[in-house]
Image 1: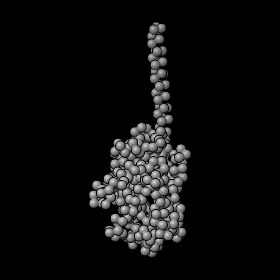
Image 2: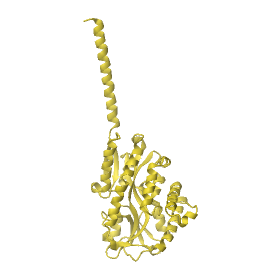
Image 3: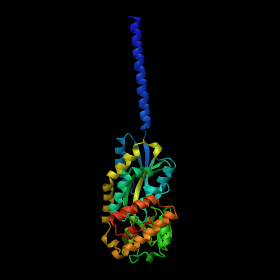
Length: 346
C-alpha cells in the first residue's frame, strides 16, 4: 500500500476525529444551556391548586422553546419572593403587591379602583402582552415581567353586614397587608385601624374575630375557609376595590432573549381559562353573603378611588403614572360619561 494512500487515510481519520470532537463539544454546550431554570410558584392550595397546574402546562410549553423549567410550589408567598431575591429561583410567581418594589409599571394594574370590570382587565392584559411600547416598560434592573394571571376582583369582607359604607369602617379593625403601601394608605384615609397581616394570616385573623374586616379575591374564600368569619351576620361588599393578579417575574439573564415575549403570549392565551377559575370561585360563594352597593353611590366611590390613586402616585411612589394614564384612557373609552373623563388628573 503506497505512502500516499496511507497519508490520505490518516488525513481522513484526523478530520473525522476533529468533527466528532466539535459535535461532542456542541452537545455538551447544549446540555449546559438546557439545564433547568427554577420557577418558584406561590399557590395557597399548594400542588392541588389551579395556578400550580397552570405552571406545569407552562413548563411543558417552555420545553418546546428549548427552555427547561423546574416548578417548585410555595404556600407561603413571602418565602417564594425571598428565594427569588436570593437567586435561588430564576423566576417567581407572586401577587403584584409582593412584586411592586421590583417594577411599579406592571404592578400598577392592581391600582385601587383602576379597572372596575373584568373586560377592562382583559383589555389591559392584552395591551401589556401585545404592545411593543409596553414590553419595554416590563423590564427593570434585569427583572422582566413575563406573564400576568388574573386572580379576581378584591372585595371587602365584613363580619357584620351592617357595615356597608366607607364611613362605617372608621374605627374598625381591618386585616391589612403591611407590605402593600396602597392598602395601608387607604386604611388610614378611612380612619380604620390597621392590623398587620399577610396572605397566610388574613384568614385566621378574620375567622377568629381578631379583625372586623379583611379584603381578598374570591379564589381565597375556599382555601382560607372565610365562611367561618362571615358566619350568619357577615357579608361581602360587591364592589371591586382592585384587581388582584399573580405576576410572573424572571431574571432576564437566566433565559434566552426571546423567552419573555413567548412567556407573555402563553399566559395571555390562558387568560380566559384563568378567569374561569375566578368566576367559578365567585359563583361558589353563597348568594346570602353578597352586599350590593346602590348604583347612585358608585360615583362617590369612583371619586374616592381616584383621589387615592393620585395621592399614591404623587406622595408615596406606589403607582406608575404612565400606567395610571393608560388605564384612565381605557375607562373613558368604555364609559365616556364618567366624571373623570372631563378632567386630566391621571
